[in-house]
Amino acid sequence: MKSYQDIKEILIAGGGMMGKNIAFVMTGNPAFRVTIYDLYPTDVEAGIRANTKQLVERGHLTEADLAERLTRIYFTTDIDDAAVAKADLVIEAVFEDMGIKRDIFAKLEARCAEDTIFCTNSSVMSPSEISAELVHRERFVGTHFWNPGHLIPLVEVVKTDATADGVAETVMEVLASAGKKPCLCKKDVPGFIANRLQHALWREAISIVEHGIADAETVDIAIKNSFGLRLPQLSALENSDMVGTQLTWNIHSYVLPHLEDSHEPSPLLKQMLDEGKLGFKSGEGFMKWTQEEIDACNADLNSYLIHMLYER
Image (cartoon, rainbow, N blue to C red):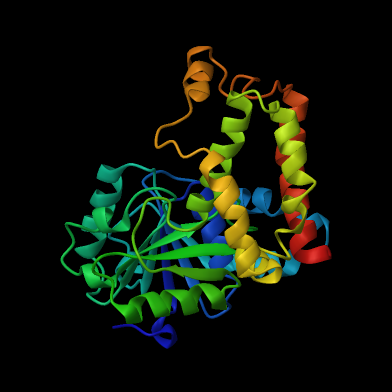
C-alpha cells in the first residue's frame, strides 16, 4: 500500500475545468509531476491561465511560479501513455455519469499498478457504487473538490465500504501537502458532509419563500448579514459550545418542530421548472437576473474568495 512518501506521479483523468483546476492545485507540491488524460485535445495552459488570472493580477501568484508549475503538467489523449501506467495516485474528474466513471476506472485498473490509489471527484455520486466492479476496491476513495477547485480549500475524502484506512490517510496527506484542507467523511452517505449541511440550509430558505414568510431577496439578505457573516470564523458546533449545550437544547426544543423537514423537493421548485425559471440559465429563478448581473456575480465570487483566503 502506498504511503505519502511514495506519491510522486499524479494522474488527472478528465481535462475539463475541474480537471485543469485540480492539476494546478496538485502542482502546489513541488515534488509532484502531474499528467492530465482526456479523450479530446485541450489547451491545458490556456485553461489554467484563465482560471488563475485574478490570482496573478492581484499578486498572489507570480508569473514565474505559474510558468514553473505549468512545466510539471503533461497532457495526453493516449490512455496507454507511459505516464498513465506509472501513476501513483489518480484523481478522476469526468462527467457525473456512473457508466463513464466506472468505465474509466476499469480501463485504468487494467493499466496502473495494483497499489495505485484511485480517487473519484464527485459531489453527489457514491464512491462505493463507482468502485463496485473494481478488483482492488480497498485503494479507492472519493475526493470531492469544491468549485472553484483552485480556490475553495476543502476537499472531502470519502471512505467507501471497502477503503483501507491507510489509503484514506495517504490521500489526506497528499491533499494537505498541495495546500488543500482535507476532511474525512467516515461513511459514504449521500451529500457527504458539506453538501448535506448546505442543502439543509437551502431547504429551509426555499420553504420560507414557499410559505410567504419572506421573499427570496430578504432571505438572502438575512443570511448574508447575520450568521453567514461570522461562519468563516465561528462555525455551527463551535457556536453551540459558545452559547452552551443547555441553550442549544432549549432552542431546538422550541424551534425544530416548526422547521421544514420534507423529504421531497419543494413544490415551488417544480413550479419554477414548469415556468422555465431556471436561474442564471434563463435569467430568472428565485430572482430576475440581467447578463451583467450574472457576470458580476460570478466574478465577485472569485474576488471574494481571493480576498478571504489571501488578503484579510
